[in-house]
Length: 556
Image 1 (cartoon, one colour):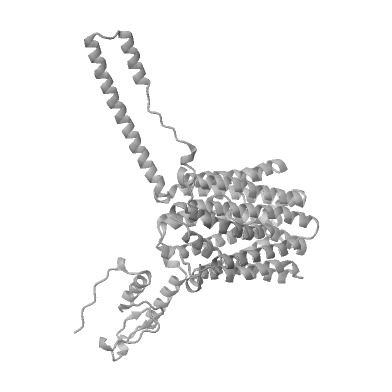
Image 2: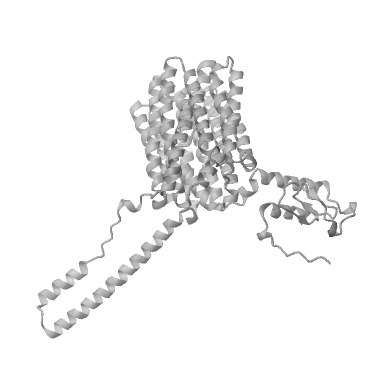
């Protein structure tokens, strides 16, 4: 007689078991799981997630009853559950409400960035600015974002993450309004420096560092890579829709309503400002859980300190009042002196001064060592990306092959869809081969395809190379962010992410000026080849510092 197995509630089941139990209940079967993966079905009708378990001879299920076998629908439902688990969809759905709000915010932001990325270089060219001036304006936008991102991100955990997000949304909204109303080069330069606008298709502003750090402390380690993958996936989908929407809108305004290029571009920037304002409204849905625990603890300590100060002040006043009454009875002091002492006591207030050092981050020695390795590598990768940003890629195809904005928008849309698919499977690949290996496998072919785009003799061949680049470009994003978040502590995560973001923007900002100079000389192909070379150096650095030093199976 076999012992009865212990009862397990659904809340105690792992993700695979919980999902399979739900579907098994619907199909009239019971769950059987073990540590190995792969769906199978026992003769007794049990659904198992194991592919290679053998039947238990002692279980009494040696004979197979055909009536008890699971139906095709049950098998299909189990396969669907397995698929959604592999792509991380179940972990994303089970994420906290704040994480889902951040994903919606991320989608809205990159949708707006997609509109500015497609037309910003074309807008400056339509205004008659020299290509070198266009490069300087885009460099100014990235350099201004460097300062703004650094300052706002470093103070986010102490001032409040939600406050920084709202302020950044307002800066983004103001940038779109100025771009829509002015075509003066100096006004646009100031707006590029002080505002938030993306000229290259990359993330700008403090949003990404704050969101990634918040997601990291709201999600468990076991599901963090999956959430990051969907974060990147949703971002690419928003970028895809933004570029296609902008290209279609601009071409329709030009062809159907006979608007000029400049007028159509300005209308797109109005939409950019509108999306930023919608993000500002949506940020009020975030709860206190988004704030770092240190912020909540500091708020509690401040409230306790203020209550204690008030209580001490009341006690001191009562004691002084009792002393004054005794002095009046003894008639040892004059009334004028007693009045002066009472006024001094009333005007005396507890002094509380908070220096700026309390808001500054404190990094440990281990965090500084991690930065010493990450900063040079991120610098190389982002510098290569700045040399061949999406804005200059769109300019290259339009300048060489005469491609219209609508075609460019659709091309970027499908490229981002391909990037979405690659980002979707990146977490599953990382679970099987490791985070660092996934970064290398994806990044090397992406760099090579980018460098070969100028060698294409036709627009069709160039578009194929661009799609190959898009298909592998995003596969290393989620594993890289999960890897970085896994090697730093929770209290330092936002600061590390902010520094990495600043380094990324700093190195990326030098690219447009160099590319603009080469484009003005008719040799823009040099920028693409240089971008490929620098990115391959990044791959060699990752392999040397992380892969060969034993950080092989690091998982988030």
